Image 1 (cartoon, rainbow, N blue to C red):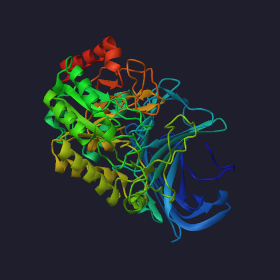
Image 2: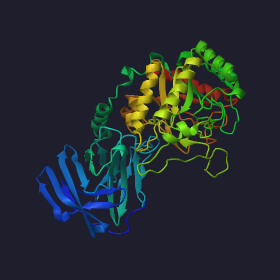
Image 3: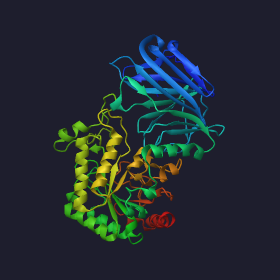
Image 4: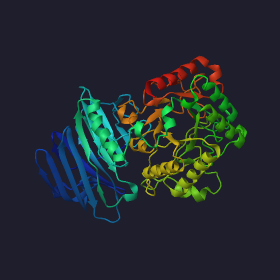
Amino acid sequence: MQDLSFTFPTPHFFLKGIEFSIMIYTFRNAYAPDEAGMVVTQEKEELTAAGNGLCFAGGQMKVPGYVEVHARACENGIRIKSAAQIDSYEEDIRCIKVTIHGIAEGKLINLIDSRPREIPPEGLNLKYPEGWRDVGTPLVILQTTEGRLNYYRSLDTSVRDKRFVFVRTGKELAAELIFEENAAQMSGRIETPEWEVGQGESMEAVYEPHRLHVEKSYGLVPWEKREDVPDWAREISLVAAVHCQHWTGYIFNDYEQVLENLKKICEQVEGRRVLAYLPGWEGRYYWKYGNYSPDERMGGKEGFLKLCQGAKELGVHVMPMFGINIVGPHFDNYEEWGLPSEFRGPGGNQYGGSVDWDGSRHYDHASNRNLNPAAPRWQNRLYSQVTGLMDEYGFDAAFFDIAAVWMNDPNHNLYDGVKQLMKRLKAHNPELLLSGEAWYDGLAACIPLLQCGHTDGVLHWHDEAYAPMFDTYARGFGHLCLGDVSRGSTGVHELGYNPIQRCPLRKGIIPTITIVDGTLEKAPLKTAEIFADANKYAEMFL
């Protein structure tokens, strides 16, 4: 992790034994409050510091500005909020950092990847929202070497960037709490939501106030009372991920074979309890993202219609996969609907990346671009494709790949766009089940069924750190890269092979099976074990 190569003097404040300081960042420079201009008013339970002037270049230079810091005691620690202004129309303030100095050593124990994480010598930078492995709700808990639970949380009421950074300076360990303003609203002034720094007696004691705050902030509704969950979806006890066509064009199951697999599954699990999740249904996985239609090699329109109708006769619900923010730029007129919708970061840089689709090891495939679903032209195109296909073929669930990705786009508020798209889809078909990849707290307000995240095939269950934070409001299922039980194949997913082939049996996690070519025939005993899990899940939780 990179850092300044010199000491930057900043005023330090103390309240209830907690030492902290403030830094301000624009797109041009880093600033600290001018200590000479600050007036500090302090009582036992409260501190206010305010003053004119900002320093930069490690305190060697000054510019006009204003900083205000307010800290107050709370039940378990202190809460800190701050505001800053720079008196230059040429600079927008991007973020404010609160550094908590001299914190105790320990391990982080409540990330989405909930395996206890040591803080390495080079430090650790964790981002919210990051729905796969880091911070799914802006609360980080550090268990000290003595067993105490120290926590750091944001009391923001909207989805905005937070970074939880743990750094070492000499022998000291510090926690940096960074708030970044919504890029579309950045100006020469910034005001942060409150940060809370405290201690708790137990995970429940730390989580419950935070869970209730999040519930109120995003209007979260318990799973059993959610109006956006159709009645049929509450009966699902098995997600069958039947893989179709790989990026390279290799076909695991065509439409006829998908239906045959579903018929065999229904011999062991009631059809009404099965959700058929179809990655690569449209043809070359990811290659055709953004231009969805049944693939001729797999049976064409007639074959896909027969699959959907056959599944309905079995009682099975079909869930095709769509990319909410990934498309192929090789489609006609991309410059009209795609180019204006491409993701940008707050600094104007284009967001992008690739996985290794073909084993070439270069991770530089240019077959996809990243689009913001809040961009009207892309949202309208995706909405029209999903609803048109739904009306034509009669499927009643839709999965949105990479739904939890977050970018602080200055052109369009991503989270608002996701909510708007989901609302439009539900208005078109109130019985539609919405599903997506990965989880952060606000996303559960508009997508009730969420696939888990993973790191190199190790699946991270959203209920693992503290189950009520997730399973009170949503349900999850196994990631696309769950290995099939016949040979560990991940089907269309780029991981290739995964020895992890089975989900834990818990209320928040619907049993999931990966089916590639020959899975049911080659491993009947192992598939029967997962089907037994599905039947047991129905008995225990439905």
